[in-house]
Length: 300
Image (cartoon, rainbow, N blue to C red; front, side, top):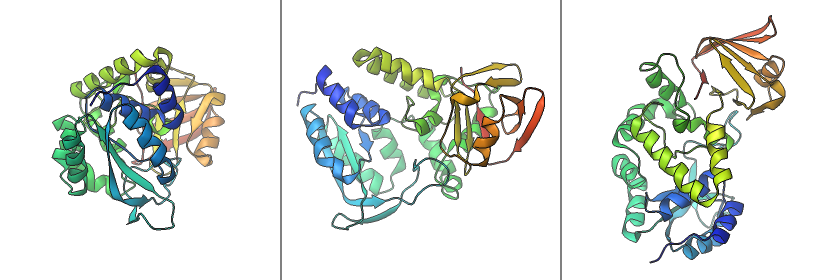
């Protein structure tokens, strides 16, 4: 089967999918991996038509997911929800698998629903070290909201000083609809993950150079991650030593609450550590932030 994403088809896919979904379709079309999407069920017929027009094989799970709303993450769901029959009147999302090889597409569907993590990760193009990281930290992630950012920060801090990470592996950018990876790396410094992100960037750039540049631009932005109080992207910020100066008017957040108000009332962070911060407005202390459920992620 011939696979071809023409410029016009790329635009139609861009209008239909999130930026992360668009990246996954491009990678599958170029035989980098089997990809998995979670479209809302009403979008499936149109999306399948577009994917088949691109010459991709598509397979669907025979049940749908009803997700429990997350706390503070803007609707991003890292874990699974309740699985129900397709005939259920509740609106849901469908596991959709796509790739160039129908046998591998089917194998990915079977591996995911058979809980064969190593095989599923292999088919989706994840490095073995990152699959091992996922398995080691799965219980910890599932005890919260299914997210691996804080274990990832812990693993990365052990091998980094100062704690500034490559932008290529900024998987936290997914909360703001960007990011060049579809998996949690074993460390922000993982060389295999960096290589995959660089390849994703090159492929996207071949279709739309300004859009690819936006993926990388967003990945370079600092992000304050919290498990339950939102995520915060500092669009206009500059780090000088242990200080992060930022424009509060350019702050993006997944939750408008107490922490958002504190950050918008400041203009700089004093970085004592990645999990100990002071919010200041000029020289005036606004708040001290310290929690095992919090982490400041800095990228270059």
